[in-house]
Image (tube, rainbow, N blue to C red; front, side, top):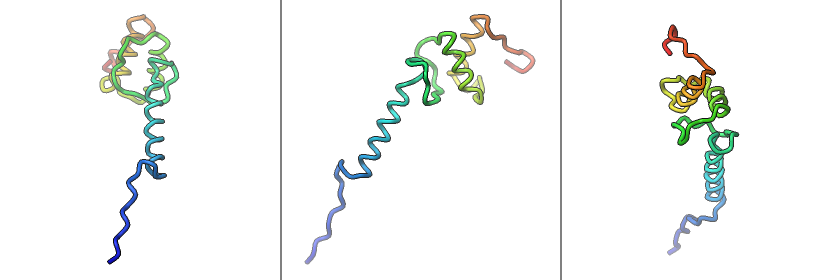
Length: 96
């Protein structure tokens, strides 16, 4: 009786290698976050680990234009830095 061939489950298949390369690229992009390099490749919405500098806060507010300040912790932290530095005022009429 003939045996059926087992499906290849090796880590060296083309699909497995492509998936691994994609995961590594995603990790590398996340590692290049605005906090560390100043050149954000992925929009991260989580709160920053350290307080933004003024330049980082400006870039973050620009990158998160479409985000609601009350929902996106990263945009909220950036706005707080700019308001604290006196570079931005919140419009109370709009609900800020």
